Image (cartoon, rainbow, N blue to C red; front, side, top):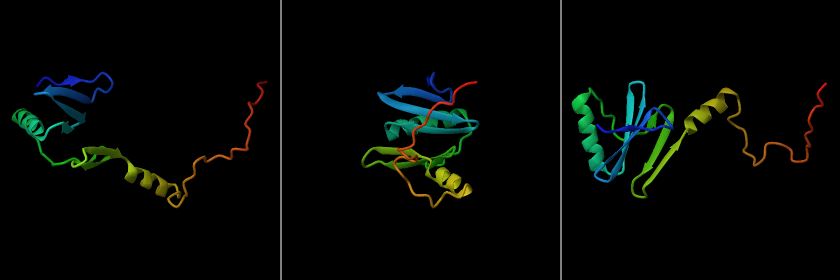
Amino acid sequence: MNFRQLSADACVYIRSLNGHTILAITHVDDMALMASHHDVLTSVKQQIAARLEVTDLGQINKYIGIEFDIDRSQGLYTMHQTSYIIKILERFGMDNSKPVRMPMDLNVHLVATPKD
């Protein structure tokens, strides 16, 4: 299918079709597809479905713990892990913590401990 594995991440594959870019992100037996044009995405989905048994879950919302917010009108695709962060904060009793710019007192001066 002419996908090329990225050297930076062995689970990400890239392909160009009719001047459009397609990304295939894999994890065990899951795959997420992203393309710069909907018709190209549909074509690639059909090609994959001809070779493998697939279940199309529609537009991506969450994949391996990463959440996706998509605003097609503005062309914005945002990835975040807000739910995971909230879960971790709750687990350690920090869900009511207040954010600060610098969590350390700026007047504290650290010095190295002399070696024996």
